[in-house]
Image 1 (cartoon, one colour):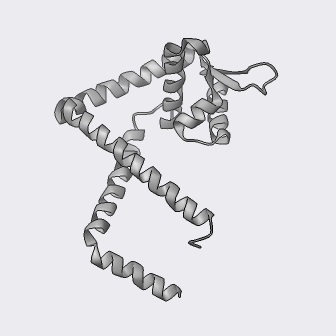
Image 2 (cartoon, one colour; image 1 turned 120 degrees about the vertical axis):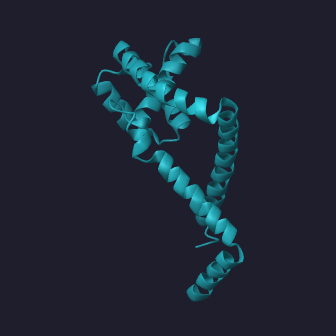
Length: 177
């Protein structure tokens, strides 16, 4: 049975070599974008910490109803992380004095973070580095090209997420084990 499945997979690859080439190229491009080249711009923060601080500051600036509070659950959802992973990261940011982590009432109503002045200053320094680099990239690549690429990437990410969910459901319901 297993041998037959492997043969079917091989036949699919042979029938559709273009899909194999495209998927390999996509995987390679995503690898390159996430490799050390991008990480080298983040001297004082990791990429995920930068994104978290940016989201916290953005909530602080745009969502008056939260009084500068970014709830842990909202941050986890936005970053597509588990509450545990988000808590661990926020704990590190708190320990470095970049955010204050508090709770409503006795804590059962939710915990939230607010960005400190130190956090804002570090975020500003990081954004300056990124602005300098990406400003040159956008100038050479073209603003309209980048906007179109980002729109296409969002569409691709939506399709990829949908496919992953479909694969997980198939595995979860036991029909494809």
